[in-house]
Amino acid sequence: MAQERRPGSLVAGRYRLISGSASSSHMEFVVVWKALDEVLHRRVDLHEVLPPYGLTGETRVRWLQGVVRRARILAAVSSHPNIVPVADLFAVDEALWLVTEHVADRTAFEYVREHGHVPALRARRVARALIEALAAMHAAGMVHGNLAPASVLLDDSGRAWLTAIRYSEAEPAQEGVIGVPQYMSPEQLEGRAPSVESDLFSLGATLYHLVQGVGLFHRDTVMATVVAVLGVDEDPPPPLRDPVLAPLIIGLLRRDPARRLTLRAARRVLDELDHGDPVAGYPAAVQAPPPTAARSAARAPTSQEPAPAPYPAPTPAPSPDRPVPAGAFGFDLVRVLLPAVLVVWLLVAGIKAEGAPVFLAAAAPWALFGLGLVLLGLQVRTALRRGGRARGARAAAPAARLLRSAAPPAPWSAQERRARRERAERTVDEALLELDRLTAAVSRGPGGDGGTDV
Image (cartoon, rainbow, N blue to C red; front, side):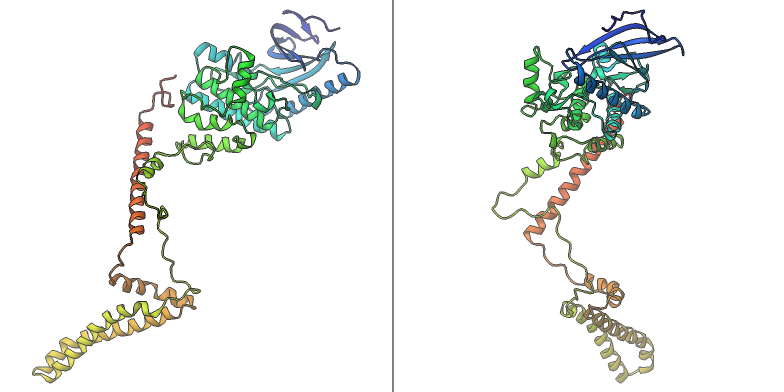
């Protein structure tokens, strides 16, 4: 029979118990003790894990093996800076004792109870720490299964650690509600085993509690809490103190596990927040329509004709596989040849008139220039007709652009005119949004989080 432990008791000949707090479920009973390691003279935390009541024989052996296996995995990932390090594992009487380093005196739940909520900037740091800690655990094949504000430790410097894992590995027939209902996922409340996706839902519920100061699904009774969690998609959550984190939290709190943010997507959202862009890159499931969409919808045409594309399709450039018709440049060549013919005609008329030598000396350079333009026009036309030769097309491109610039522009169609107007309006809207972001960045408080929290 397990010996009753009290503050002041000595465990394993080296750990002096100071105080403890208990938590239980139908699968396990855990007491977390603050203790003093009398060998190394340092503070530690002892997790006394007792087997469920009534386990005997082979079932008890499997339970012990599951606890040891999870403790070993936790020790393997405890080198992560956001997971409480594991120092030792031993058995005394009928209990298993997991020893972890003492990193902080206060949980996130206790912090919220004392201060009302976690400041916005610190909440984002906590979100980053928990995401990275869960990623390390999931990569090692371990699910936390018990994530809640009481599972997060905070110190005065702003660091956060993940602790208070679910120790037992129950068989499928023995699975049930294990944890705090208001931080559990809907599928867990329906009787399914904890999973990676359920950890993400618990992360969203935990972050909401830290930012808002109260749990999103907190109700007066357990049954009302369960009903609120199961109907999570019916009503949107109220506005947050830190609205920038809203897309992250809402994306994690999707009832359908397939629609929830993954850890990779959640990390990308935080990266965008760190770079000062809280809009771009959010998954469609959590992205709210930008103000430009509402304004564009108000200006949308009411006719039955199909709406034009936001941007007009560009005219394809000449390529070797797509020759340009020579007739398209006939008008341009005529405009080049007419001045040359006029110069030659004036030259011939000057020869027949008096003072021919003086006139020839002045007109000859212009005549040569006109003939050069004629030759240049013929070369350009020949090169453009040879659409299959890329070298000729590249050589003629500058001259072709020069010739096109001389032609009058084609009139815009109604559809193209509307598309250009919408593009200009979109540019103005984006400029206004950028101005709003710059104004918000300049007006941030001393804490750097856009508020007055310190």
